[in-house]
Length: 373
Length: 73
Image (cartoon, rainbow over all chains, first blue to last red; front, side, top):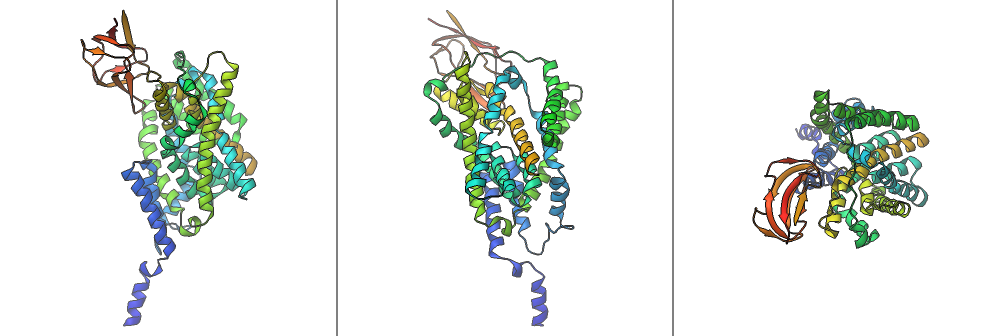
């Protein structure tokens, strides 16, 4: 009788729980709490947090290779490179490249703000002994772009995918806290007050040509960026062509929402206790923060360098908007600018480097892939 | 002299903090425009008397649209 009871007990998860699993529940619950109470990137952190809990339930086998439900989402969604490009399709449909095209020199700021990606990459590899693919995955956190981070991690360092994705999304949620001190440190009150000259209006033809030209130039230049860049630009062409409104709306609403669900759960589920409870994880989070701060700084410094060569000065705060986190980084630039001068409205100017930053991060990921695969 | 208050960006008017005929000071809170899912306060550009408000709450405005006319001393 006792034997039967203990056999019955053995089929439940309770006796197979480990302290590590319970600790991971706490982490999952913390992310869910941050999503609900603080509204930190709730669209991602909520499903990720729940995914973490699900992956740490003994005997449930949700991440069992071949049979687990979440494993299938992971394998066919992320490992097969389907979901991150579909997210980019939606982002392309949501993105107005107008502010960037109105003042193309701002593209340099979007490139400049990728500096942190490489700084963190070298620190991780040379000083902390991470392997090259691991260091690259950590560096790309500084690009402030979730799907790109997940895309790169799934290809070169899958064991770090969950951690890097959580770091990227957490810091993106913290952009309003991380960026302003760096921005104030590197700019004078006078520089923050610089108003921007009115930009020209961008015509429809130009906006339609952009995705086509961009896809040709960027993919020819960095072929490894093709999956993300292709979908990003076709989404943008849906938007700007104005003749496929249904495809445009489906991409930016329903489809984007659906794939977001199938992205968050398996990303969280990659975080089992063995993968996550390691000392490396602390370094990953610290380096991710370093990458964010360094990207902000290099963006601003590039803007200041450009001011040395041009007659009409640009507000160096715009450099910080090159940290892609769209549109949070641009909003933060706007707010810091308004604190210096109430009548300085930088929002639309900041959107230029902001969307350029997304392209910059995809290219940076493509370069890593080319050299490390 | 007349000073025009214009929209620095396209968006939707969601709050107006003054009435026609009211005196306002430079950098007072003026009109709130929602753009990029963010509320942006447009501050009063000059001290003076609000002569006319050209928009109402809920209007969509384009960049450079006139929001209000202020009569300055």
